[in-house]
Amino acid sequence: SQKIEQNSEALNIQEGKTATLTCNYTNYSPAYLQWYRQDPGRGPVFLLLIRENEKEKRKERLKVTFDTTLKQSLFHITASQPADSATYLCALFTGTASKLTFGTGTRLQVTL
Amino acid sequence: KAGVTQTPRYLIKTRGQQVTLSCSPISGHRSVSWYQQTPGQGLQFLFEYFSETQRNKGNFPGRFSGRQFSNSRSEMNVSTLELGDSALYLCASSFGQYEKLFFGSGTQLSVL
Image (cartoon, rainbow over all chains, first blue to last red; front, side, top):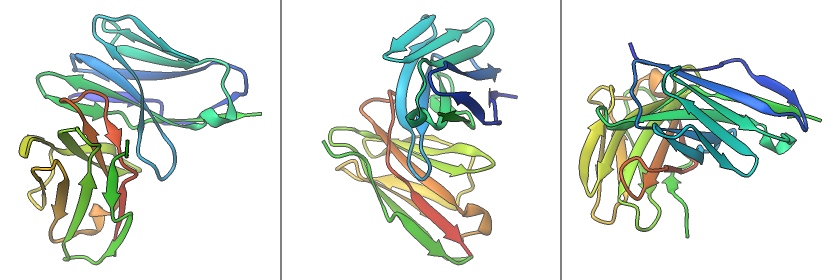
């Protein structure tokens, strides 16, 4: 069956460190993958999109990698700040299903 | 540019009732998608509309329905509410199909 797995346990890191979040998938052939940030009581906010033929994408302190062989995407936040504390969701789009499917998200907590 | 607007923000209903949720997309966006979010299941895709046509549908019972108007505004309806329908209902708009999604803040539905 198709699965998108993100670590359900919260990730706690210290301010200034790099946070790395993982998104693994099985039985998908995604055309592209997206990462979103969600704060409590709010809708998700788009962060980055990476296509199947791209290995890496960067935006300011954010970096996403996409390994279609390992079926995995890594999401990095460098020099993390308490304001980065939120839940981060990965989402896959496949042309065959023609819809965006979300993982359950990983909560990141950045402490001083 | 105004963001995606969802109304109402909070709703309390009892079992057996029906409910209609409204979504106004970003101006110029023709695609509107609806998601149900619960703590256990994460974001589950309900349906997607583009130019008043339903292009895709998730695995939800027929009690869940939607429509899109000529001005791209969308509504979703849930009939014969069940306790398990309690969730955050999120609407998202995009310019094209499954480009980055812009989400509203959602409607928090509680079924008693």
